[in-house]
Image (cartoon, rainbow, N blue to C red):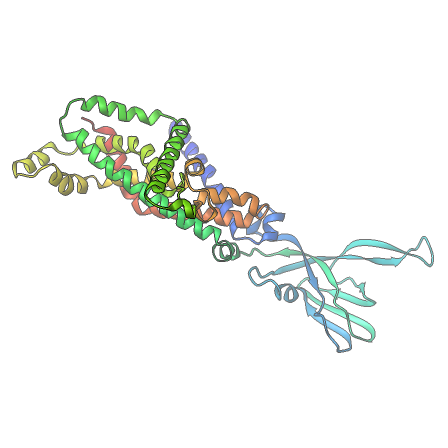
Length: 408
């Protein structure tokens, strides 16, 4: 009983640790810039005290009045469309000069918070407001009131909007370009290794050739090679290929006249090759362990019927290995989509070709303290992996377990 309770507590703690940051990320992305900068995300679900500046009336008026009426919320929402402000006005910050009782004939500058219902002098008029935002500005004689900006402290109701998403997706081209670049990198970098690994796994599982077991051990041991250790030889290799291609082009064409001989060493293709190389050992290991556990009688029956290795692989192995293929696809897609370090060192460094993780890293300097924009970009980057995982999760556990309990 105690062990079960402890497991539940630990599981609940893990869920809490993962869920709270996600909720904070989404909540902040749906808040206004002012709210995200002045209060924590946990305050967005209850009324929050925030300061807002409003103008008593519009400029350019020519009509003389004795009494001017209006509403603070209407004045604020006239300029703010995405996050309409509502709630209760707690006070207005009064700043002005009043007679100094200690020095007759002189004035002093004071600052104070005026509560609802209390009269205060604004441009030689009596200004009174209510908690619901209604205000009355009364003058001793007809006058054309000049607009006055006042600071209202409002107990603001929770409000959410999609302004941050509209800005990062439609007003800023960097995020859409990064999304396209990430798809260009991720889709081939997932399909290529899983295709190669499926053929290799079938060979290791059901084909006999000299050195098969030792070769499989070497492939599996490559999983322990640190990614960072391979960066230098990979970069040198791609740089050598680019130099060789530039020299070949200069030999075959007149590119020197137009200065177009150079080939970039950091391209999408270099990312495809690198991610394929890093992902193949794990893919071969998972798929081989799954395929070797398939019924031997099924393959022998296919051989008796005259099927060759290609026919067996395409018509039997691939349909039966969908859970394992889906499991690795999720692993590979999530890794490539969220990868920063490989893309930073191996991938393109031009602004229009940057993948999403690099774009997010650069937005830390671009958006600075605009947390709602940073979080909106982060949420967008999470949507695609979440969709992929939810679409293929029914194969995920089945593929992993089948490959872990059976072997050959």
